[in-house]
Image (cartoon, rainbow, N blue to C red):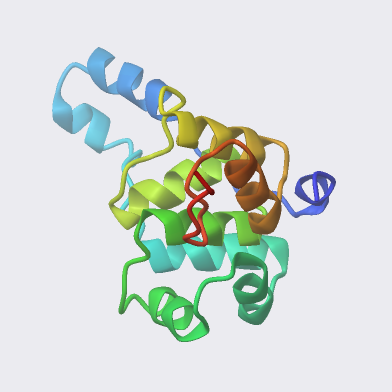
Length: 156
């Protein structure tokens, strides 16, 4: 799966938040920054569709690879539902997202981004960065004694 990330088509480059923050702080007025058109009003369904199209994936492929309920995924793509943190991570893994794309997906869903100071998050970050599938990520989480994304707790 690690090779899949290299095969996908490129998403348009977005400026990093740090770059934008620096530009905002150096602007003489808020209007000067806002007039540059650097802010964006992106929705979760728009971002998911952009990711799907960039990878030339069918929704059915995403559903199968992520393990998230099909009806639920279709509702999320239509903007009728929110994913929640674990489902968002599962969907990102199912789409072969990079770490940056995964963090954006989480942010757009209104949930906490992955944080390397949290043991479970650290494992997930490592798996995303190495191109692991959802199943492979769950195997790593289970192996390391963490709650899996698919909802299975490790044996005590």
